[in-house]
Length: 462
Ligand SMILES: Cc1cc2nc3c(=O)[nH]c(=O)nc-3n(C[C@H](O)[C@H](O)[C@H](O)COP(=O)(O)OP(=O)(O)OC[C@H]3O[C@@H](n4cnc5c(N)ncnc54)[C@H](O)[C@@H]3O)c2cc1C
Image (cartoon, rainbow, N blue to C red; front, side, top):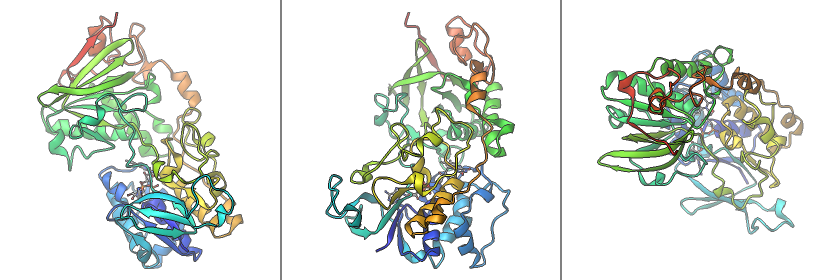
């Protein structure tokens, strides 16, 4: 029986390359119509990792055997380039191609004839993989590399959708829409409300600024839940991945130059129809109810793993990150922000269900710091374990580029405003000038360009 790999993204295909190297039969199930279907959706985004971190070792050996040569290792590929120059050629390699099944979404995984409760003889039972089509395939082991792209977090600040959030599909987008390219018509000249404070939000904001330069009337408001803006921008020049550090700094400069208004710390409560084409976003800024009218909302609040399809698998998960229990303390964003993750592999990724592993983006659960280099090392170690090469499985060696931001630096910088000290009279870290003025206080001075301002209504509770 084969090892079943769920997901034909970069990490799922890396697992396939390692399975081939160990001469293990395997089958890859990919929900999309091409390999890397999730990456294709953010294909317009330039990654912050150069090529040298984007190619798996076993995959590289396979590809080089067909005359493929590695792209310039210092170049930062876009998502499209990552697929066209690496993922697709890998998926087409004769060693992988016959074993990758497209348009094959997995809807459930379990043990044949054994529900989750039944123990005796469980480890000897094959896995059963159910596809959306209804087809069932048996496998001796399962590697879930299905990513988290299709499970975005909501705009609601408590992790649950804001009231009404699900009723405006044509006005609310999740992830990183191609606002300056493919979806330009939807956003040009519109009032756009962006939620979130990570790298995805930086990308969207910077693209929207480019759009606003070309399309008059495009206005942007950026809302974040965080109350310490100093922790938002990342490590800048201290980041070992130069482009990752620079992304945050570019967003920071855009805010300081008044290109965008920032509402922080803002907690979204509801999203409702305002009449006409507008949406009304209601939330709380400090102690005040603050509502905003916008035409489009873009939610960049991260992702979470789809655990529903693993309902019948015995999992051991970190209570809040939803990653394997042993991995949680290594990647908890409450504790770690340095990007330094101790090398980990099959041992840390193991679940009570024998021969079942989650690797890649999904292995990090809700933690936001996953890097492909980590996923490739996970895939190598897990496949070695499944092939019985325990020594290779336990020999995990991985040095990740640090973000240049450590929790201790953040604590020292707490209370800052737009990266600098907050004026005493500002009531929050970085209250937008317009809101601060409406409250009779002076803001931080970041965000002063009127044309970019959306209509903000402030109703003091007191
Ligand atoms: C915008 C963006 C930029 C990033 N930039 C970097 C970077 O610079 N450097 C870096 O190291 N990392 C980066 N990452 C993080 C991470 O490396 C990528 O998300 C990477 O694509 C993760 O690879 P993966 O194979 O684990 O998951 P994915 O690429 O998400 O692949 C999962 C695959 O599984 C398929 N699938 C999903 N559900 C099912 C199912 N039920 N059945 C069958 N198939 C399914 C999907 O269609 C998809 O093809 C970035 C992420 C994003 C979103």
